[in-house]
Length: 199
Image (cartoon, rainbow, N blue to C red; front, side):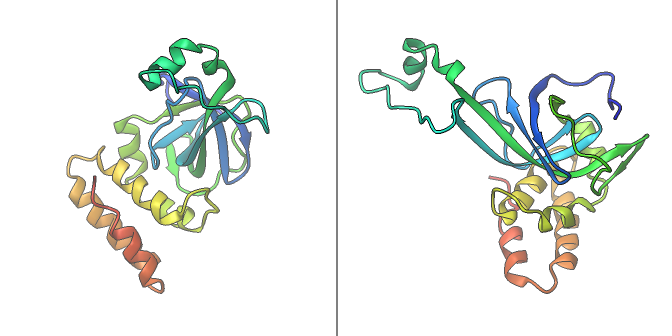
């Protein structure tokens, strides 16, 4: 799969696991995980951040408390600099589309993301281009996500609305699309719409 943008933004993570519907990526910097609902890209595949965690690099080994005698959380890392090498921050992204030539399509790509593929946080112009239509919403609503789908859908729309000049108009249009998709599930629709107001 080809790279989309010759002026790619800074890479933030690297794919370590991938399937047809989602990918996991380890962030290069500890705790520098994009917000829930952020649009990210690896190669020509788009994903929405649908989960995140910071864990020990060694499976089954939990971190231990170290801050009893420290004045701040930063001091814990200063007095134990090895911690940054023993922990990892990871994101899980739900695949919501891909670039096919110059066209953005909002359904699953023919192949999963590549292991060790670089992950980039999409910039406002790329977000606007992707979110010109709402075909991705159906994919998100039906996805098996690590976080409740109502939270992910609402967070995604809030994040995307920030890239549009008139965020309210964008959210109203998204709400109408959701109303059509969830016409038989009023409670779920209400839960998502209630979370669309930016914090």
